Amino acid sequence: MPLDAIVKGLLEQMAANPMPKLWEVPPGQGRELYRMMSQTLEPQGIAIGKIENVSFAGPSGDQIKLRLYSPVAGGGAALPALVYFHGGGWVIGDLDTHDALCRTLTNDTGARVISVDYRLAPEHKFPAAVDDCYAAVKWVEQNASNLGIDANRIAVGGDSAGGNLAAVMCLMAKKSGPRLVYQLLIYPVTQFKAETKSMNAFAQGYVLEKQAMTWFFDQYAPGSDPNDWRVSPLAAPDVAGLPRAYVVTAGFDPLRDEGKAYADKLNRAGVAAVHVDYPGMVHGFFNMQGVLPVARTAIADAAKALRKAFEG
Image (cartoon, rainbow, N blue to C red; front, side, top):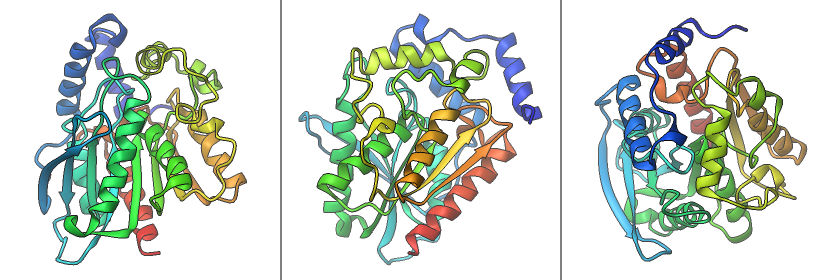
C-alpha cells in the first residue's frame, strides 16, 4: 500500500523546510523542536473532565511529575487507569508533547490516564527512565483509592520509547507486581539497535530515521547488553503470563518489524496480543490527529480495545 496522501504531503513539506537533525543539536534544542512539531500537528484544548498535576518522590530522591486526566463523563465511581509513558527516544518528549493524545485517550476509554514525566537521557541514562516508570506504576497502585482509581484495573501504555517502557513495566510487574491488566504498545521499540528489514528500508525520509534511533540509544543506554530485556523486551526469555496486548505499527516506520515481532512473541507464549498495522502511516502518526483523520480513527480503535479489556 502506498503512503497516505496526507502523510506524503507532510513529508514533502518537511523535506522542503528541513529542521536540524536531532544528532546535530544539543538535546535541549531537540526537545524544543519536538514541542513545536507537536503544537503544529495536534489539536489544542480538547475538552476533558479534569486535569491534575501531582508529584511524588522518585527512586533518585527527585520529584517525579504526573499529569492525571479524567474523562468528561467520569462520574464518581472508581475508574480504570492507563499509566502512560510518552515517546521521544528517551531523550525528547514530555507531558505537554503528549497532552492531546492523553486527553483523547481519557475521553475515548472512560479511564483516568496518568502521564509520567520520567527522567530523560543523556542527563539521566538507563535505567533511570525504567526506575522512574516502575516507581510511578507502583505509586498509582498504592494510591489508587485516593486517586479515584480501581486498583484491579490498571493498564500501561506508551508510544515508541514509551511503548518500550510500557512493555518493560509488564515484565517487571510479572515478577514483583503490581498486577496489570493490559498493555497498549504504540509502534514500540523492542530491540536494541535493530537491523530489521523495515529499519533499513525506511532508514531515511519517513519522520523517524535509523541514525536517530542509533543516536537515541547512544544517549540513553550506551554500551548496554542488547539482550538486557529492560532495553530490548524482545530479548526477554519468558513472556508467558504477561497482560494482554494491543500492538500498533505503521507501514512506513523503521520500528514496524520489531513491533510485529514482539506481538508474535507474545502470541506464541499464549498471551493474547492483537497486532494492528496501518500500512500507509509513518512513525509518530498517533501524535498527528490534528491533521490526519487516520490517526483519530486509530486512537479510537485502540481505546475501544482498552475499554473492552477494562470491562473484563
